[in-house]
Image (cartoon, rainbow, N blue to C red; front, side, top):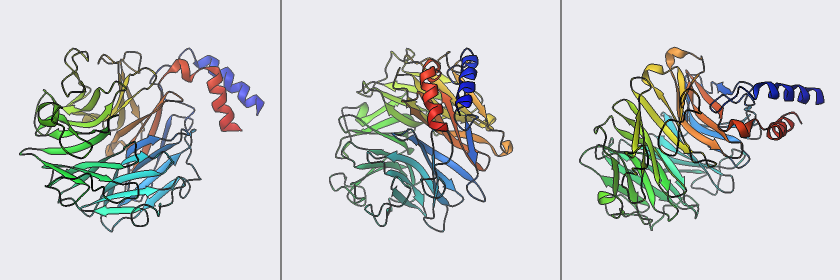
Length: 424
């Protein structure tokens, strides 16, 4: 064993000169990549999160079922979770999509999605078993109009659960708040929605809710294509529109409008400025708003940046590096479907030339390329300063881990600690 460690330390000395930010992390499944087919027909991951112990949890769909996987730090399936690292949950006999994940302080995992035109919220214990203290045997189902999408979940400081999406085939935003036990929160309501715990916001044009985030003061952000714009809406803690935010509670980015413009992901900086990622006019779009909903002109001088990678490039997910504030995004290009795309931007809104190839990393899984690959979600392992992207490769789920800070990740002491954990 000592000889193995010594040999790997020698290798570290050799590669330390060449490794850089954005490189695949070869301590993860020995290649930086993990992919496996869960179902007989297809498997897709839509959302990924990092646990306190640095294990990776991701949710998605396997055939017609909800699917959850958990990976160890080294990229192997975690046998202490579900069945050999996997949990497959049949919800109905109709196709079910699990779209978003959040991890509670106690390690329980909340996922949300849709099945048979119903919202579905599931909570499992840290071992992958359904949590019987939540809803009915760990599951909450409810209706919210027709033509629904449940795309996002976030946790408030008090443990309440915020779920976001849209209803009526993309014509109304819907936001739901559940208490810790899975019951609807009666404090959160409006006069339009069909019950307490729900808020419905209708628009004459599009209203597609893609992502939610919670501010330090408890106010709720939901972004998407709202009123035909690349935009974000803010609600008060009780569900009422926050009219102090932008015009009529809406902060928007003045780029090409219409169905092609959409903010697919939202996150909040420590200074409470709001970062949005999505697409418009077939380009990556990254924007930053001030706390009042106005464009932050210190970000690329305009408040937003458009990046053309290939025709029809889409940002699916946005995350922040806690150690330096840089912004990392994941997505894909329709003309480059056989690869993941991960990009990093500086805090002033320009592509980060120290990451990958002038700020962009394209990863090839080489799995059934004719079926396409895409990165749907991104998460940051702040302890290890690494970047995790999840999505699909052909019919398989796919996860890749990248070096976020080469100076930190290739520090000998950090590397030896990881090796000891892996080989002990």
